[in-house]
View 1 (spheres, one colour):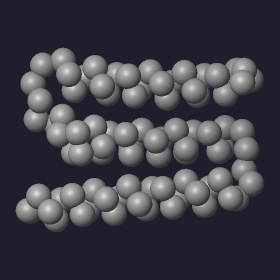
View 2 (tube, helix red, strand yellow):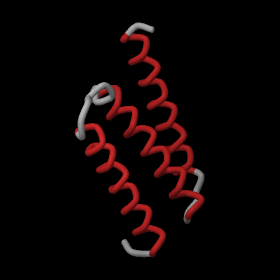
View 3 (cartoon, one colour):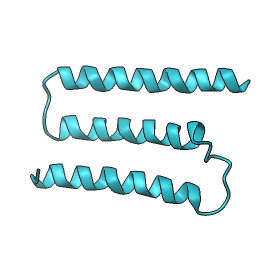
Length: 87
């Protein structure tokens, strides 16, 4: 697959996940039923951006894992903060 085609598919996935997140937000759901899908969508979008658009997929060494770890840490802290009731 060409790079342009791959980037187009990645962009389409990002667009569809964003539309799904907006639809979920407009649905009026709250609580765990709302937070977990949004955090999973953010994880998926972040991984695509890190691997493809930041071109860290082929990077050797710790750089890819540092950035992915940061993403996981931030999402985990947001999830824990929400589930514990802290603003």
